[in-house]
Amino acid sequence: MHSLRKDSTGNTPNAKTNITKMIEGRNLKPYIMNGKEFEPCQSKEDVIQRYDNWASAYDDDMVVERLEAPQAAAEYIKAYVPQEERVRARVLDLAAGTGRMGKELYKRGFRNFDALDPSKEMMKILEKTGLYTNKVVEFLGKEETSLPSNTYDVVVIVGGLLDGHAPVDSLIEMVRVARPGALICIAMREIYLEGLREFTHHYQPLEDKLEQERKWVKLERKRFPNYYRGEFGVLFPYKVL
Ligand SMILES: C[S@@+](CC[C@H](N)C(=O)[O-])C[C@H]1O[C@@H](n2cnc3c(N)ncnc32)[C@H](O)[C@@H]1O
Image (cartoon, rainbow, N blue to C red):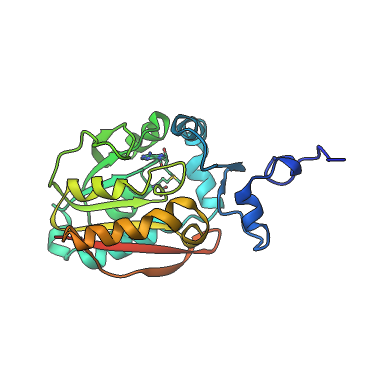
């Protein structure tokens, strides 16, 4: 007989998803945020509803959960962009959430930020930072967004490119909005590379295709500690050609 007792994620044990099963052996909960599972099959509207509901608590939760990915991406971007160019460099923060990336880059000398995120409530918190000029409430995906082409010096996405969120096809849109010579910086949890459909099947083929088409060149694959709950993250930086 199944027990209806809830586990630490708030789910009943017999309602566990494949992702939960996949990670159980590692004692990790990489696909669980705010005690909720984000499932690959969820509709994008449902995902956004979760972020809308979470927005007011998100920043405090991320301190407790030790999400330090924005700091790691900001350090990489700082090292890439010469000091004298940082103030005027146009930065596009995709899946910007509450604007933690902007805050980290501001500390490192950047001043010129635009943001895209489909969650209105996350955007309301981001607006309060006062750092971002254009705030676009749209989904990043297969379709073109309303963002201008050939514009940004830095395009960054932290924690936004994963199943149920922005799909791997978004790489094409990132290249479109970046100007030649720009840096595209993608950060994600390392465990996603092994376990989530979007990456195991789609990421590398599209990454390679864009390289073969001379749209970008991959600079490196950089592993860094303390991405989330002390687990490793990975940065994928690309130079746009
Ligand atoms: C884990 S949060 C990361 C927020 C922020 N980058 C940070 O590091 O704190 C993921 C964000 O992705 C956004 N998101 C979800 N689906 C998306 C999509 N299709 N396109 C763009 N952003 C999306 C959510 O609204 C949420 O703000």
